[in-house]
Structure formats: structure tokens, C-alpha cells
Image 1: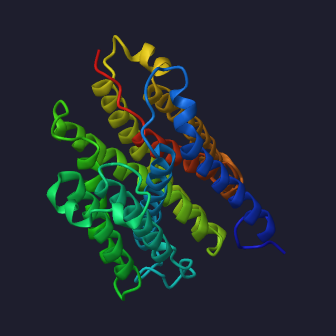
Image 2: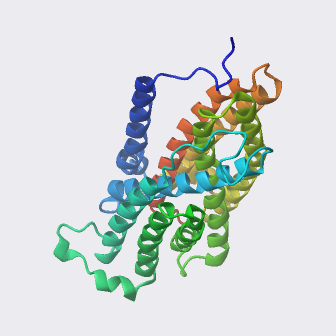
Length: 332
């Protein structure tokens, strides 16, 4: 007798250990990354850079999870035999992690807002936080927008229409894009547009793959292979958009004639190089999974490289959080 479910998977204990190891590695990147990246560059480390990088990592991860769930659930509804999101021919999707992600995102955004409220310094005590001052600056207003957006996203996630999360989540993406490119920067709106596309596609890719693998644990093999194949086709477009926007953003901050020197001589360049290497590994794993999906006798053998892809994507998200806490390179 053959099993109609997905391929063999690690035991619950094995998965728990793997997740703990991945979370620990992802946390070490932003916590220890600033000192390592700045070593020997002559650049000064901002106070609390490790903590800020960790909060940014949590915020990015909290954005990826609900965006990925909405994306994959939409793909699932487009498959034959599905209705109203759960489907008449397929089992229901797994329990949503969006409420927990919204709570984590709210806490991270609140922590980052407290830093902005103390003049971009880590507060030593509650009295140091000037909450009212947030309304007086652009960064403060954007920080408040992210706090409120995650709060609303959490309320939407537990409502009868969780799809409405898309609006507060979109507000977080817009706020991050604007925050990353202040008005004093060269062509800030261009930079914000690139970041907007980059962050949106990255959230769809990372969060979507995570949720797709969770769905495959419940769906029959044939339906699961169809869903994974549909996700893979969209992921190709997402990877192309991420690559294009990433290259353009890098060239805006590090002109072609200086990029090789800055990739090794500046903290931002080193962190960017590490992220590029991680994305290259992710792309290779995605290609491996796609080949298995199209050519293997059992398409769901693609789940093995896809799980590794999710793990490396988690490290790439942590590298993105690290980048936001490092000084932007000078345009030489």
C-alpha cells in the first residue's frame, strides 16, 4: 500500500531541534554581525547596533509569514477542485501563524520606535523615551505607522476576513521603503521604489515557500505537487525581480568603479556580500528543487531541497536585518 500523503519527513523532535538551531543561527547574525563586519574598516559602530539589527530581523520575519500565507492560500484557491480557500477536493490549510507573527512584529516595531524616540539611541530606562517626540520627525511617524500597522494586522488575522491583513502589511512595506531612503539621499523616491519591490518579492518568496511546505504536510501528493509547481513558476519571477532590484540598489549606494573595494573594505559591503552569497545558495537550491519537481518520478522529492532553501532564506532575512544597522557606504 502506498501513502497518498507527502514524502517522509523528520520526526517532531527532529524538526524542533532543527528549528531551534536555525533560530539560534539567525539570531547570532544580527547580534554579532555588526562587530564582525566593522572590524578593520575604521567605521564606528552605532550604539546598540546588534539589538537594532535583531529587532529588524524579527520585523522582516514577521512580515514574511503573513504575506506568504496570503500568497500561497491565493495560489491554492486557483487550483482545480478548491473553493473558498479550503477546497472541496483538498484538506484545509494548516493553522495560521499570522497572529503570532503580528505579535512579534508589533513588539519589534515598538522596540524600534523606542530607539527613534530617544534620538536613535538605545534607552536605558523608560523615562528616556520621548513618545510624543515621535510625531515631530519623519522617522518617528514611520515608526509609529509600523507599530499601528502590525497591531491592525493582528486584529485582521483573528477576524473573519484575515485576507484584510494585506492592507496593514502593505503599510509596513511602504514605511520600510521610505525609512530606508531619507530625503537627504540621492533620488530617495527611486531608492524607495526599488526597496518596495525588493521587500515585497522577498516576503512573497520566503514566506510563500514556508507556508507551501506546511500545506504539503496536509495535502495529498498529487495536489501538493501541483501547488508546489505553481509556486515554483511564480518564484522564478520573484527571484528575477529580487535580483534586478538588489543590483540596482547596490549600484546606487556603491558605484561600479568602487563596488569591489567597498564589498571588502566597508561593513555594509561585507554584509551585502554575505547576503549575496546566501541568495546564490538559495537560488541553487531552488533550481535543484525545480529540476526534481519536473523530472523526478516522485515530484515531492523536491521538498528536501525546498526545506534547505527555507533555512537559508531565514539566514538571508537575518543578513537583511544586519544591513539596516550598518553605516551606509560613502559614494566615492
